[in-house]
Each structure stands twice: as structure tokens, then as C-alpha cells.
Length: 127
Image 1: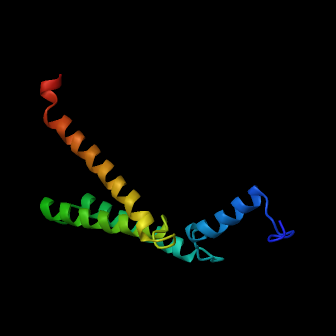
Image 2: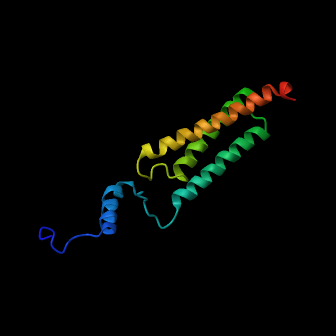
Image 3: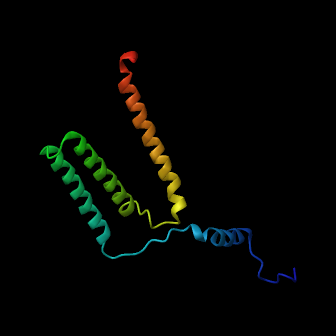
């Protein structure tokens, strides 16, 4: 008892101190901004990309194959924009913490699209 003196910690204090030291790197680090200029620019960019795709489809500007390629490119660009701006892809604990859920989302989406195509192709056998 003389080794520790009066500085002995309770179990709760020791647990909190260990948690603070061990988990400090897990806390997200967000840049603080007073005016959300990046989010507003991302929103306007998303609107522009949406209206561009709408304009191309409604005015039949390109042949169907080229139109499909352009719309898919616009969709991929818009998804990247929204992931970067609204899902704060760069503002977190690290890229590894975000890639695993992102891969899981793509896997689930791929499964849903694949199963939907499967059902549409073979619906005559089911009904």
C-alpha cells in the first residue's frame, strides 16, 4: 500500500482511463466550417448532373447506346460526388473503416440487381 500511496484508482476510473487511451484514435476528426459551402456546391452539382441526364433523355440528343453510356457515366460521377460530399468519405477514422461497409453496400446492391434480373428472366417458370 505504501507503493501506491493515495493515488490508487477505483476500478471505474481505471477503466475510463484505459478506454480514453486505447480508443482515442477511433474518434472521428471532422473539419469545422461555419458555412456549409462544400455541401451546397455538392447539392448544386448533383442537381446539374440530374438535369443533364433528364435533358439528354427527354430531347433524344444521342442514339440509345451512346445515351445509355453517358447516363451511366453521369450516375457514377454523381454517386462519387455524393459519397465524397454528403457521406464524408474523407473525414473519418481512416479509409479502411469506410471501405469495408462500402464493399458490403456494393455486394448487397449487386445481389439485389442480380436477383431482380433473375426473376425478370425466369418469371414464366414461376407463375
